[in-house]
Length: 370
Length: 87
Ligand SMILES: Cc1cc2nc3c(=O)[nH]c(=O)nc-3n(C[C@H](O)[C@H](O)[C@H](O)COP(=O)(O)OP(=O)(O)OC[C@H]3O[C@@H](n4cnc5c(N)ncnc54)[C@H](O)[C@@H]3O)c2cc1C
Image: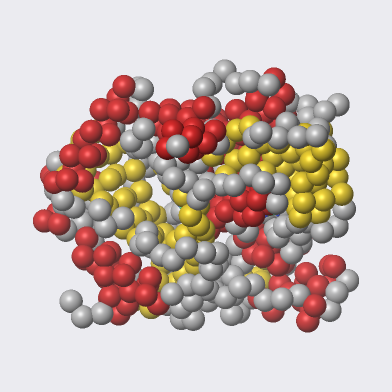
Protein backbone atom coordinates (compact mmCIF):
# COMPACT_ATOMS: atom_id res chain seq x y z
CA UNK A 1 0.00 0.00 0.00
CA UNK A 2 1.37 3.42 -0.93
CA UNK A 3 1.72 6.04 1.77
CA UNK A 4 1.50 9.81 1.84
CA UNK A 5 2.10 12.65 4.24
CA UNK A 6 0.12 15.85 3.91
CA UNK A 7 1.62 18.85 5.71
CA UNK A 8 -1.00 21.38 6.83
CA UNK A 9 -4.42 21.02 8.46
CA UNK A 10 -6.25 23.66 6.48
CA UNK A 11 -8.96 23.08 3.91
CA UNK A 12 -6.43 22.34 1.15
CA UNK A 13 -4.61 19.73 3.22
CA UNK A 14 -7.80 18.04 4.38
CA UNK A 15 -9.37 17.92 0.94
CA UNK A 16 -6.21 16.34 -0.47
CA UNK A 17 -5.81 13.93 2.47
CA UNK A 18 -9.43 12.78 2.28
CA UNK A 19 -9.24 12.19 -1.46
CA UNK A 20 -5.97 10.26 -1.14
CA UNK A 21 -7.45 8.06 1.58
CA UNK A 22 -10.50 7.50 -0.60
CA UNK A 23 -8.19 6.17 -3.30
CA UNK A 24 -6.61 3.76 -0.82
CA UNK A 25 -3.43 5.67 0.01
CA UNK A 26 -2.30 5.32 3.63
CA UNK A 27 -2.27 8.99 4.57
CA UNK A 28 -1.09 10.98 7.58
CA UNK A 29 -1.83 14.67 8.00
CA UNK A 30 0.52 16.83 10.08
CA UNK A 31 -0.70 20.07 11.64
CA UNK A 32 1.63 22.29 13.66
CA UNK A 33 -1.20 23.71 15.79
CA UNK A 34 -4.79 22.46 15.56
CA UNK A 35 -6.78 21.85 12.35
CA UNK A 36 -8.34 25.07 10.98
CA UNK A 37 -5.87 27.28 12.88
CA UNK A 38 -4.55 28.82 9.65
CA UNK A 39 -6.38 30.91 7.07
CA UNK A 40 -9.18 28.36 6.71
CA UNK A 41 -10.57 28.99 10.18
CA UNK A 42 -10.26 32.73 9.64
CA UNK A 43 -11.86 33.13 6.23
CA UNK A 44 -15.35 34.17 5.26
CA UNK A 45 -16.12 30.92 3.48
CA UNK A 46 -17.13 32.54 0.22
CA UNK A 47 -17.40 30.14 -2.71
CA UNK A 48 -16.99 32.40 -5.72
CA UNK A 49 -17.19 31.66 -9.42
CA UNK A 50 -16.91 35.25 -10.69
CA UNK A 51 -13.22 35.34 -11.61
CA UNK A 52 -11.58 36.89 -14.66
CA UNK A 53 -9.45 34.07 -16.01
CA UNK A 54 -10.72 30.89 -17.58
CA UNK A 55 -8.68 28.40 -15.56
CA UNK A 56 -9.90 29.90 -12.29
CA UNK A 57 -13.52 30.12 -13.42
CA UNK A 58 -13.47 26.47 -14.47
CA UNK A 59 -11.87 25.28 -11.24
CA UNK A 60 -14.41 27.19 -9.15
CA UNK A 61 -17.26 25.82 -11.28
CA UNK A 62 -16.06 22.26 -10.63
CA UNK A 63 -15.60 22.96 -6.91
CA UNK A 64 -19.22 24.09 -6.67
CA UNK A 65 -20.31 20.83 -8.27
CA UNK A 66 -18.33 18.91 -5.64
CA UNK A 67 -19.80 20.96 -2.79
CA UNK A 68 -23.35 20.42 -3.99
CA UNK A 69 -22.96 16.68 -3.29
CA UNK A 70 -20.44 16.70 -0.50
CA UNK A 71 -22.74 16.68 2.55
CA UNK A 72 -24.21 13.42 1.31
CA UNK A 73 -20.83 11.93 0.44
CA UNK A 74 -19.28 12.81 3.82
CA UNK A 75 -22.49 12.16 5.74
CA UNK A 76 -21.84 15.49 7.46
CA UNK A 77 -23.66 18.78 6.96
CA UNK A 78 -21.02 21.11 5.52
CA UNK A 79 -23.47 24.06 5.71
CA UNK A 80 -23.10 25.09 2.07
CA UNK A 81 -25.74 27.70 1.25
CA UNK A 82 -26.04 28.85 -2.36
CA UNK A 83 -27.39 32.34 -1.85
CA UNK A 84 -25.35 33.72 -4.75
CA UNK A 85 -22.73 36.45 -4.78
CA UNK A 86 -23.51 39.98 -5.86
CA UNK A 87 -20.63 42.17 -6.97
CA UNK A 88 -21.56 45.84 -6.81
CA UNK A 89 -19.73 48.35 -9.02
CA UNK A 90 -19.16 51.70 -7.35
CA UNK A 91 -17.87 53.25 -10.58
CA UNK A 92 -18.13 52.82 -14.37
CA UNK A 93 -14.70 51.32 -14.72
CA UNK A 94 -15.47 48.54 -12.27
CA UNK A 95 -18.81 47.92 -14.03
CA UNK A 96 -17.07 47.54 -17.40
CA UNK A 97 -14.64 45.04 -15.92
CA UNK A 98 -17.48 43.07 -14.37
CA UNK A 99 -19.33 42.91 -17.67
CA UNK A 100 -16.17 41.74 -19.43
CA UNK A 101 -15.76 39.02 -16.80
CA UNK A 102 -19.31 37.75 -17.36
CA UNK A 103 -18.37 37.16 -21.02
CA UNK A 104 -15.32 35.08 -20.10
CA UNK A 105 -17.51 33.20 -17.61
CA UNK A 106 -20.19 32.55 -20.24
CA UNK A 107 -17.52 31.02 -22.52
CA UNK A 108 -17.02 28.26 -19.95
CA UNK A 109 -20.73 27.79 -19.17
CA UNK A 110 -20.88 29.90 -16.04
CA UNK A 111 -23.97 32.05 -16.08
CA UNK A 112 -23.59 35.39 -14.33
CA UNK A 113 -26.38 37.95 -14.60
CA UNK A 114 -25.86 41.67 -15.10
CA UNK A 115 -28.04 43.74 -12.79
CA UNK A 116 -29.24 47.34 -12.98
CA UNK A 117 -29.93 49.57 -9.99
CA UNK A 118 -33.60 48.55 -9.70
CA UNK A 119 -32.79 44.86 -9.67
CA UNK A 120 -30.13 45.42 -7.04
CA UNK A 121 -32.53 47.43 -4.91
CA UNK A 122 -34.98 44.54 -4.94
CA UNK A 123 -32.37 42.04 -3.72
CA UNK A 124 -30.62 44.38 -1.28
CA UNK A 125 -33.22 46.95 -0.16
CA UNK A 126 -30.89 48.39 2.50
CA UNK A 127 -28.24 49.48 -0.03
CA UNK A 128 -27.90 53.19 -0.88
CA UNK A 129 -28.36 52.73 -4.59
CA UNK A 130 -27.04 56.21 -5.44
CA UNK A 131 -23.58 54.88 -4.55
CA UNK A 132 -23.85 51.99 -7.01
CA UNK A 133 -23.61 51.96 -10.81
CA UNK A 134 -24.71 48.36 -11.34
CA UNK A 135 -23.67 44.85 -10.51
CA UNK A 136 -23.48 41.17 -11.33
CA UNK A 137 -25.02 38.14 -9.68
CA UNK A 138 -24.19 34.47 -9.89
CA UNK A 139 -26.79 32.33 -8.16
CA UNK A 140 -24.69 29.16 -7.91
CA UNK A 141 -22.17 30.85 -5.69
CA UNK A 142 -22.53 30.83 -1.95
CA UNK A 143 -20.94 30.44 1.41
CA UNK A 144 -19.70 27.25 3.03
CA UNK A 145 -19.07 27.18 6.77
CA UNK A 146 -15.27 26.73 6.96
CA UNK A 147 -15.24 24.66 10.16
CA UNK A 148 -18.04 22.37 9.02
CA UNK A 149 -16.36 21.70 5.69
CA UNK A 150 -13.05 20.97 7.38
CA UNK A 151 -14.58 18.80 10.11
CA UNK A 152 -16.60 16.94 7.50
CA UNK A 153 -13.46 16.03 5.59
CA UNK A 154 -11.62 15.22 8.82
CA UNK A 155 -14.30 12.82 10.05
CA UNK A 156 -14.46 10.89 6.79
CA UNK A 157 -10.67 10.91 6.45
CA UNK A 158 -10.34 9.28 9.87
CA UNK A 159 -13.06 6.74 9.07
CA UNK A 160 -11.04 5.75 5.99
CA UNK A 161 -8.07 5.07 8.26
CA UNK A 162 -6.33 8.43 7.87
CA UNK A 163 -4.30 9.80 10.77
CA UNK A 164 -4.40 13.41 11.95
CA UNK A 165 -1.48 14.48 14.14
CA UNK A 166 -2.07 17.87 15.70
CA UNK A 167 0.62 19.98 17.37
CA UNK A 168 3.06 18.22 15.06
CA UNK A 169 5.22 20.57 13.02
CA UNK A 170 7.04 19.53 9.87
CA UNK A 171 10.56 20.86 10.30
CA UNK A 172 12.52 19.25 7.49
CA UNK A 173 11.87 17.42 4.28
CA UNK A 174 14.06 14.41 3.80
CA UNK A 175 15.33 14.58 0.21
CA UNK A 176 17.67 11.99 -1.23
CA UNK A 177 18.78 11.91 -4.89
CA UNK A 178 16.16 14.52 -5.81
CA UNK A 179 13.43 12.37 -4.33
CA UNK A 180 11.45 12.98 -1.16
CA UNK A 181 11.63 10.12 1.33
CA UNK A 182 9.91 11.53 4.39
CA UNK A 183 9.38 14.34 6.84
CA UNK A 184 11.10 15.20 10.10
CA UNK A 185 8.82 16.79 12.68
CA UNK A 186 9.25 18.23 16.17
CA UNK A 187 8.21 14.79 17.44
CA UNK A 188 9.09 11.98 15.02
CA UNK A 189 10.45 11.26 11.61
CA UNK A 190 8.02 9.79 9.10
CA UNK A 191 8.73 7.97 5.88
CA UNK A 192 6.33 8.16 2.98
CA UNK A 193 6.10 7.53 -0.73
CA UNK A 194 4.57 10.94 -1.38
CA UNK A 195 4.63 14.26 0.45
CA UNK A 196 2.28 17.18 -0.12
CA UNK A 197 3.13 20.59 1.29
CA UNK A 198 -0.18 22.38 1.94
CA UNK A 199 0.99 24.54 4.84
CA UNK A 200 -0.63 27.73 3.58
CA UNK A 201 1.46 30.88 3.88
CA UNK A 202 4.04 28.90 5.85
CA UNK A 203 4.73 26.53 2.96
CA UNK A 204 7.40 28.75 1.52
CA UNK A 205 9.42 28.68 4.75
CA UNK A 206 9.59 24.92 4.56
CA UNK A 207 10.25 24.84 0.83
CA UNK A 208 13.08 27.33 1.13
CA UNK A 209 15.04 24.84 3.24
CA UNK A 210 15.28 22.58 0.17
CA UNK A 211 16.01 25.35 -2.32
CA UNK A 212 12.51 25.85 -3.74
CA UNK A 213 11.81 29.57 -3.75
CA UNK A 214 8.20 30.71 -3.90
CA UNK A 215 7.90 34.30 -5.09
CA UNK A 216 4.92 35.52 -3.13
CA UNK A 217 3.72 38.22 -0.78
CA UNK A 218 2.09 37.34 2.54
CA UNK A 219 -0.44 39.93 3.67
CA UNK A 220 -2.64 40.22 6.72
CA UNK A 221 -6.38 40.51 6.07
CA UNK A 222 -8.78 41.50 8.83
CA UNK A 223 -12.39 40.47 9.22
CA UNK A 224 -15.18 40.85 11.79
CA UNK A 225 -18.49 39.42 12.96
CA UNK A 226 -21.52 41.34 14.23
CA UNK A 227 -24.21 40.31 16.65
CA UNK A 228 -26.68 37.79 15.19
CA UNK A 229 -29.62 39.37 13.33
CA UNK A 230 -32.81 38.12 11.75
CA UNK A 231 -32.03 36.80 8.27
CA UNK A 232 -32.03 39.65 5.76
CA UNK A 233 -29.01 39.31 3.44
CA UNK A 234 -29.31 36.45 0.97
CA UNK A 235 -26.21 36.77 -1.22
CA UNK A 236 -22.61 37.47 -0.30
CA UNK A 237 -21.91 41.08 -1.28
CA UNK A 238 -18.63 42.45 -2.65
CA UNK A 239 -18.11 46.08 -3.67
CA UNK A 240 -15.56 47.25 -6.21
CA UNK A 241 -13.25 49.08 -6.09
CA UNK A 242 -13.62 49.60 -2.31
CA UNK A 243 -13.35 45.81 -1.71
CA UNK A 244 -15.91 45.99 1.08
CA UNK A 245 -17.53 42.56 1.47
CA UNK A 246 -20.11 41.06 3.78
CA UNK A 247 -22.49 38.16 4.10
CA UNK A 248 -24.84 36.81 6.70
CA UNK A 249 -24.19 33.40 8.19
CA UNK A 250 -26.81 30.79 9.00
CA UNK A 251 -26.41 31.84 12.64
CA UNK A 252 -27.38 35.38 11.67
CA UNK A 253 -24.06 37.13 12.22
CA UNK A 254 -22.88 39.50 9.52
CA UNK A 255 -19.29 38.65 8.61
CA UNK A 256 -17.39 41.30 6.72
CA UNK A 257 -14.12 42.85 5.73
CA UNK A 258 -12.63 45.46 3.45
CA UNK A 259 -9.40 44.12 2.06
CA UNK A 260 -7.08 47.06 2.54
CA UNK A 261 -3.49 46.67 1.46
CA UNK A 262 -1.57 45.92 4.64
CA UNK A 263 2.08 45.40 5.43
CA UNK A 264 3.83 42.26 4.32
CA UNK A 265 4.47 39.75 7.09
CA UNK A 266 3.02 37.17 9.41
CA UNK A 267 1.54 39.49 12.04
CA UNK A 268 -2.05 38.58 12.99
CA UNK A 269 -2.99 41.44 15.34
CA UNK A 270 -6.42 43.01 15.05
CA UNK A 271 -6.42 46.78 14.61
CA UNK A 272 -8.79 49.58 15.51
CA UNK A 273 -7.91 51.07 12.13
CA UNK A 274 -9.63 48.14 10.40
CA UNK A 275 -12.78 48.42 12.53
CA UNK A 276 -12.95 52.10 11.59
CA UNK A 277 -12.44 51.76 7.83
CA UNK A 278 -14.79 48.81 7.58
CA UNK A 279 -17.52 50.62 9.52
CA UNK A 280 -17.16 53.75 7.38
CA UNK A 281 -17.38 51.79 4.16
CA UNK A 282 -20.33 49.73 5.38
CA UNK A 283 -22.31 52.75 6.60
CA UNK A 284 -21.68 54.46 3.29
CA UNK A 285 -23.10 51.61 1.16
CA UNK A 286 -25.64 50.22 3.65
CA UNK A 287 -26.75 53.06 5.96
CA UNK A 288 -29.27 51.06 8.07
CA UNK A 289 -26.48 48.75 9.21
CA UNK A 290 -25.10 51.60 11.32
CA UNK A 291 -27.28 50.28 14.17
CA UNK A 292 -25.58 46.90 14.25
CA UNK A 293 -22.99 45.99 16.88
CA UNK A 294 -19.60 44.48 16.13
CA UNK A 295 -18.91 41.42 18.29
CA UNK A 296 -15.40 40.38 17.41
CA UNK A 297 -12.66 40.82 14.87
CA UNK A 298 -9.66 38.73 13.88
CA UNK A 299 -7.11 38.43 11.10
CA UNK A 300 -5.79 35.84 8.67
CA UNK A 301 -3.02 35.57 6.12
CA UNK A 302 -3.36 35.66 2.37
CA UNK A 303 -0.38 34.74 0.24
CA UNK A 304 -0.32 36.23 -3.25
CA UNK A 305 1.69 34.73 -6.09
CA UNK A 306 2.90 37.11 -8.85
CA UNK A 307 -0.21 36.43 -10.99
CA UNK A 308 -2.54 36.11 -7.98
CA UNK A 309 -3.45 32.49 -8.66
CA UNK A 310 -2.54 29.67 -6.29
CA UNK A 311 0.32 27.28 -6.98
CA UNK A 312 -0.79 23.64 -7.31
CA UNK A 313 1.12 20.62 -8.54
CA UNK A 314 4.48 18.86 -8.85
CA UNK A 315 7.92 20.17 -7.97
CA UNK A 316 11.39 19.42 -9.32
CA UNK A 317 11.73 16.94 -6.42
CA UNK A 318 10.25 13.58 -7.25
CA UNK A 319 7.08 12.69 -5.29
CA UNK A 320 6.96 16.11 -3.64
CA UNK A 321 3.82 18.14 -4.38
CA UNK A 322 2.82 21.63 -3.32
CA UNK A 323 -0.42 23.55 -2.84
CA UNK A 324 0.29 27.08 -1.66
CA UNK A 325 0.16 30.82 -2.51
CA UNK A 326 -3.62 30.71 -1.99
CA UNK A 327 -4.05 34.26 -3.37
CA UNK A 328 -7.23 34.62 -1.34
CA UNK A 329 -9.08 31.96 -3.35
CA UNK A 330 -8.02 28.55 -2.07
CA UNK A 331 -11.10 27.96 0.07
CA UNK A 332 -13.19 28.05 -3.11
CA UNK A 333 -10.78 25.83 -5.02
CA UNK A 334 -10.02 23.25 -2.32
CA UNK A 335 -12.92 20.81 -2.87
CA UNK A 336 -11.91 20.12 -6.49
CA UNK A 337 -8.18 20.52 -5.91
CA UNK A 338 -8.25 17.62 -3.45
CA UNK A 339 -9.63 15.36 -6.18
CA UNK A 340 -7.03 16.54 -8.70
CA UNK A 341 -4.12 15.96 -6.34
CA UNK A 342 -5.30 12.48 -5.50
CA UNK A 343 -5.56 11.73 -9.22
CA UNK A 344 -2.14 13.28 -9.94
CA UNK A 345 -0.44 11.40 -7.13
CA UNK A 346 -1.98 7.98 -7.70
CA UNK A 347 -2.02 8.05 -11.51
CA UNK A 348 0.88 10.38 -12.31
CA UNK A 349 -1.31 12.70 -14.35
CA UNK A 350 -4.72 14.36 -14.28
CA UNK A 351 -7.63 14.38 -16.68
CA UNK A 352 -7.50 18.14 -16.31
CA UNK A 353 -4.78 20.58 -17.37
CA UNK A 354 -3.15 21.92 -14.21
CA UNK A 355 -0.32 23.79 -15.97
CA UNK A 356 -1.85 27.27 -15.46
CA UNK A 357 -1.45 26.63 -11.71
CA UNK A 358 2.01 25.03 -11.88
CA UNK A 359 5.06 26.38 -10.12
CA UNK A 360 6.82 26.16 -13.50
CA UNK A 361 4.79 29.03 -14.91
CA UNK A 362 6.94 31.49 -12.99
CA UNK A 363 10.26 29.85 -13.93
CA UNK A 364 9.45 30.36 -17.60
CA UNK A 365 8.84 34.05 -17.06
CA UNK A 366 12.22 34.45 -15.39
CA UNK A 367 13.95 32.71 -18.32
CA UNK A 368 12.16 34.89 -20.85
CA UNK A 369 13.46 37.98 -19.11
CA UNK A 370 17.06 36.90 -19.61
CA UNK B 1 -32.34 13.92 32.28
CA UNK B 2 -31.44 17.32 33.61
CA UNK B 3 -29.24 19.55 31.51
CA UNK B 4 -26.25 21.60 32.58
CA UNK B 5 -25.91 24.68 30.42
CA UNK B 6 -22.29 25.74 29.96
CA UNK B 7 -22.70 28.48 27.34
CA UNK B 8 -25.88 30.49 27.74
CA UNK B 9 -25.41 32.61 24.62
CA UNK B 10 -25.23 29.61 22.30
CA UNK B 11 -27.18 27.13 24.43
CA UNK B 12 -24.43 24.56 24.79
CA UNK B 13 -24.68 21.86 27.43
CA UNK B 14 -22.14 19.86 29.38
CA UNK B 15 -23.15 16.88 27.29
CA UNK B 16 -22.31 18.76 24.07
CA UNK B 17 -18.87 19.62 25.40
CA UNK B 18 -18.17 16.07 26.59
CA UNK B 19 -19.24 14.65 23.25
CA UNK B 20 -16.94 17.04 21.39
CA UNK B 21 -13.99 16.10 23.62
CA UNK B 22 -14.68 12.42 22.98
CA UNK B 23 -14.70 13.08 19.24
CA UNK B 24 -11.13 14.35 19.50
CA UNK B 25 -11.68 18.10 19.80
CA UNK B 26 -9.64 18.02 22.97
CA UNK B 27 -7.62 21.23 22.80
CA UNK B 28 -9.37 24.39 23.93
CA UNK B 29 -9.33 26.20 20.56
CA UNK B 30 -10.67 23.22 18.58
CA UNK B 31 -13.29 22.62 21.26
CA UNK B 32 -14.47 26.24 20.94
CA UNK B 33 -14.75 26.02 17.17
CA UNK B 34 -16.46 22.65 17.06
CA UNK B 35 -18.93 23.13 19.89
CA UNK B 36 -19.44 26.89 19.45
CA UNK B 37 -19.04 27.89 23.10
CA UNK B 38 -17.60 31.39 23.61
CA UNK B 39 -18.78 32.63 20.20
CA UNK B 40 -21.93 34.44 21.32
CA UNK B 41 -22.39 38.01 22.55
CA UNK B 42 -20.50 37.44 25.85
CA UNK B 43 -17.48 36.15 23.93
CA UNK B 44 -16.77 33.49 26.53
CA UNK B 45 -16.81 35.64 29.63
CA UNK B 46 -19.49 33.45 31.20
CA UNK B 47 -18.54 30.00 29.98
CA UNK B 48 -14.84 29.62 29.39
CA UNK B 49 -13.95 28.79 33.02
CA UNK B 50 -16.53 26.01 33.14
CA UNK B 51 -15.20 24.54 29.93
CA UNK B 52 -11.59 24.76 31.10
CA UNK B 53 -12.51 22.97 34.32
CA UNK B 54 -14.25 20.16 32.45
CA UNK B 55 -11.56 19.78 29.78
CA UNK B 56 -8.74 19.74 32.34
CA UNK B 57 -10.56 17.06 34.38
CA UNK B 58 -11.05 14.92 31.28
CA UNK B 59 -7.39 15.25 30.35
CA UNK B 60 -6.09 14.73 33.88
CA UNK B 61 -4.54 18.19 33.97
CA UNK B 62 -4.83 21.17 36.27
CA UNK B 63 -7.07 24.01 35.03
CA UNK B 64 -4.06 26.34 35.04
CA UNK B 65 -2.29 24.04 32.58
CA UNK B 66 -4.81 25.06 29.92
CA UNK B 67 -4.68 28.48 28.35
CA UNK B 68 -7.62 30.75 27.65
CA UNK B 69 -8.74 30.95 24.05
CA UNK B 70 -7.34 33.94 22.17
CA UNK B 71 -9.50 36.95 23.03
CA UNK B 72 -10.99 38.83 20.09
CA UNK B 73 -11.52 42.60 20.23
CA UNK B 74 -13.63 44.61 20.95
CA UNK B 75 -14.07 43.61 24.62
CA UNK B 76 -17.74 44.62 24.49
CA UNK B 77 -19.94 44.93 21.38
CA UNK B 78 -19.61 48.33 19.64
CA UNK B 79 -22.00 49.99 17.17
CA UNK B 80 -20.89 50.38 13.54
CA UNK B 81 -21.98 54.02 13.83
CA UNK B 82 -19.65 54.63 16.75
CA UNK B 83 -16.72 52.98 15.00
CA UNK B 84 -17.38 54.90 11.77
CA UNK B 85 -17.33 58.22 13.61
CA UNK B 86 -18.67 61.57 12.36
CA UNK B 87 -20.24 61.58 8.92
C1 LIG C 1 -10.07 37.23 6.11
C2 LIG C 1 -10.01 36.24 5.00
C3 LIG C 1 -11.13 36.03 4.20
C4 LIG C 1 -11.08 35.10 3.16
N1 LIG C 1 -12.19 34.86 2.42
C5 LIG C 1 -12.17 33.91 1.46
C6 LIG C 1 -13.34 33.61 0.71
O1 LIG C 1 -14.40 34.19 0.94
N2 LIG C 1 -13.27 32.67 -0.25
C7 LIG C 1 -12.10 31.99 -0.52
O2 LIG C 1 -12.09 31.14 -1.41
N3 LIG C 1 -10.99 32.24 0.18
C8 LIG C 1 -10.99 33.19 1.16
N4 LIG C 1 -9.85 33.45 1.87
C9 LIG C 1 -8.65 32.67 1.57
C10 LIG C 1 -8.74 31.29 2.24
O3 LIG C 1 -8.91 31.46 3.63
C11 LIG C 1 -7.48 30.51 1.98
O4 LIG C 1 -7.17 30.53 0.62
C12 LIG C 1 -7.60 29.04 2.40
O5 LIG C 1 -8.22 28.91 3.64
C13 LIG C 1 -6.23 28.42 2.44
O6 LIG C 1 -6.33 27.12 2.95
P1 LIG C 1 -5.04 26.25 3.11
O7 LIG C 1 -5.44 24.94 3.63
O8 LIG C 1 -4.27 26.26 1.84
O9 LIG C 1 -4.14 27.05 4.18
P2 LIG C 1 -4.38 27.22 5.76
O10 LIG C 1 -5.80 27.19 6.10
O11 LIG C 1 -3.58 28.40 6.18
O12 LIG C 1 -3.76 25.91 6.36
C14 LIG C 1 -2.38 25.68 6.47
C15 LIG C 1 -2.13 24.92 7.77
O13 LIG C 1 -0.80 24.46 7.80
C16 LIG C 1 -0.32 24.53 9.12
N5 LIG C 1 1.13 24.56 9.05
C17 LIG C 1 1.94 25.58 8.69
N6 LIG C 1 3.22 25.22 8.73
C18 LIG C 1 3.24 23.92 9.14
C19 LIG C 1 4.30 22.98 9.36
N7 LIG C 1 5.58 23.29 9.19
N8 LIG C 1 3.96 21.73 9.78
C20 LIG C 1 2.66 21.39 9.96
N9 LIG C 1 1.62 22.25 9.75
C21 LIG C 1 1.92 23.49 9.33
C22 LIG C 1 -0.94 25.81 9.65
O14 LIG C 1 -0.98 25.80 11.06
C23 LIG C 1 -2.31 25.79 9.00
O15 LIG C 1 -3.30 25.20 9.83
C24 LIG C 1 -9.88 34.39 2.91
C25 LIG C 1 -8.76 34.59 3.72
C26 LIG C 1 -8.81 35.50 4.77
C27 LIG C 1 -7.60 35.68 5.64
